[in-house]
Length: 281
Ligand code: AMP
View 1: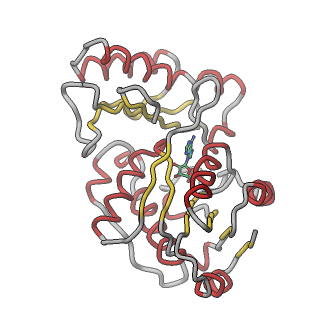
View 2 (view 1 turned 90 degrees about the vertical axis):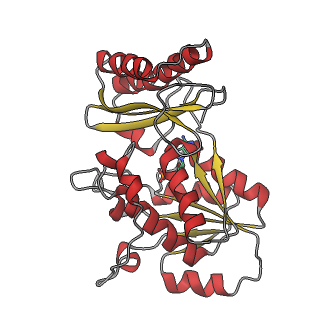
């Protein structure tokens, strides 16, 4: 596996490639099985797989966990090598955002829903860095987790809006045995909070089950979910039922709905979602 830490080295290698079928998995590192599932899918469907690790400062709002975000480059690199990744791209902040950097991808709608209002500028940072990586890596396909469903949705929209010729693949959420969605941020949780955190998924499952049994009133269901989480000690940012097509809020829940939640346990913010019609997202 090649490891590139400068844009120059990466681009020298990339520009010399004749292979077109390149799969790309952008990450912030501290990798877990969720990330690996994306890598494996890329390996299965492409001739070359490139993974990036970059803790993108632009997507952390003021006061968020940028400085304490977990990092372990050596372990990540070792695991990616074992998985047969062709190249690991690990650029510096100074190269990604040099002095004078000034162009941003902004989708105003992103800031109005779900995580948007709670994380000002987050999606602007995400979309910008993903577009920058797309320009550098020039993949045929890029792999994203549906755990970050809003991100996945916005990237698909950006691809359409900018006429990018990249196939975006959304992968299901990998979970711990308890149901807790795997996340690098789970490393912040104490043993006690780790047990408690699984309650988000359980709550969404209970709501999905109620909808499958015929309950429809979105507000009643949302309130029930929010109350259940609050009672268990979470500080809830949102618990919402939205539709799959455009993520619009749904007054009437149905089999096509997706349940979204974001809640804090202590100083850790957790997100999760679940599609009502069976499979886990
Ligand atoms: P991150 O390093 O958190 O930026 O995540 C990199 C990619 O891995 C994103 O596309 C995430 O949605 C995806 N991802 C993170 N956690 C999971 C998970 N539990 N299951 C599947 N994909 C995930």
